[in-house]
Image (cartoon, rainbow, N blue to C red):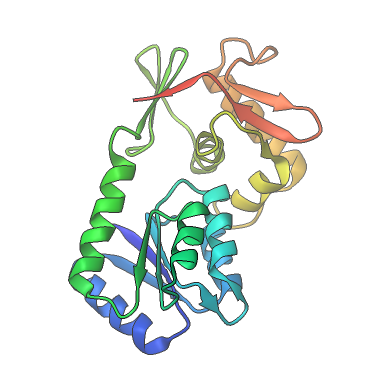
Length: 227
């Protein structure tokens, strides 16, 4: 079931939208503030975010940038701000669609489906040297032999995969990763988990070719081809 996060401070609109989307078998969570939305984004997995621009404790534009920096998921603005400048600004920060209130639920659902189709198409298979990763089904193969990761190892690896070619800071990995009990891991534990992932993926752990260390900053994955 597709999980959608709605960030909207108008309770009538948010509840009505939640009701309509749940009829269509979407799993919907509502946040009414930027702070609570960021917590949800960092600690839960969502397939799409529907976002207002005017929020009580911040700006939806900034929140959209935060989402795009941390996750590779579609964002749709749903807002009363209808000037050309607002629309251009929203799209320029990475939004996948921009819908002006008042809106028709049927059209919104069609746009949700369209945005998700674009993201899913040819994006779930990643090839890195002799490693093949199916991000949709969470399967990993090395030379066609399946590799098993723990849930936390997968969460760390998936964070790196969502930022292919760019460095992910240790702080960001620490914020996104928690153990099976929901407790956040510490800096030393992160080093251990990176080592464990390398032991499963790399030919030579002491000379890693897949997960590379960027000294003093974090880690990055290079040389990947999406299929």
